[in-house]
Image (cartoon, rainbow, N blue to C red; front, side):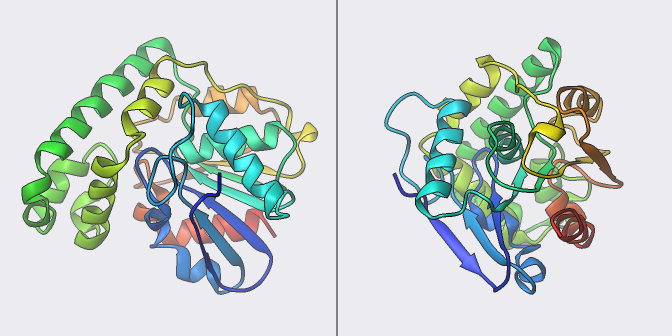
Length: 260
């Protein structure tokens, strides 16, 4: 299958992989700055945005297979990789398989304890139910600072400051994604993310984590580093689950410095 992808800019190629429910547009706050010096290729995962769903069961391994096939078909197997949330986990998995070059993983999943995994499943399942119920009035709700704060308090350290257009587009993509529930189930009940020493990967591995992340809590960074010995950890202050939303300038700097 071919993934929907948007290309911006010129320079060494850089792949952006979004998270659960998101499309390539979740990276809009950082796209212009990245595209000023890189050819940015931002994809929709299978079953999200404009990419068709996987033919079989939705799993992390299956999504990683689809990304790997996309890289191979497009002669991009040596590309630098950036991912957010589930996308961050996927770029780590590609690095573990020996694909890509340098990797920046922003708040990756897959490194939780059993209790944290249960909390993740329950909270995200409740959130998507609410988002689906609110679809008819979502433009009005996301158009106010109070509405954005109520809906995105789990995801952003400053939800009231986010662009109403960004928030509306994001929440509509979650509700419309045919593979949302299946991927949530795969995350909740599937295996944890495996690791490998960074010296066995094609390039550097940098893991960014928001200190105010309420989806994959900061304590999980210790597990991530233990599974990827040699990875570098970067903390984002005053930042929730999406550094490209809460700290866009710092996110751009981290990505460009880590993949230079």
